[in-house]
Length: 189
Image (cartoon, rainbow, N blue to C red):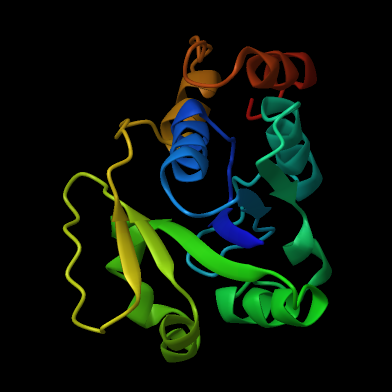
């Protein structure tokens, strides 16, 4: 099976993430998208991160009933911080029957040369890149890429957390079930 790995903190997951995942399963040759929840991204501060199990649960709630979109806790079992190359290596060993690709924004692709062992990643893995405002795709590293014409929504998890702290509504930015979970558990307050 062809599986796209959508890595991120998802702190919290929002409709922009879900629209990208839905676009990928509808408009590419990938058969499934896995939201890979990163317990600790080496490029981000972990201080404002909600517990990884809560973030995973929010994704599971948001995608309930979907057969082509899954939530993955695979990085919970690996050393922290999470490095994509280590996760790919683990997944190839655990699921040799699957073909894995990476889904990332053009902002992430512009920094891929800073990733651990990025040469190994681009030599062995196809990258599906969705465009982000202000980040053109310049493929000077000759990676195997496919540029997606996914809908662009300027929504960020950081902005959502700021709204929550200011006691403002996040309705329509996250699925209703995610909004309810955040409110009832007092996340990000």
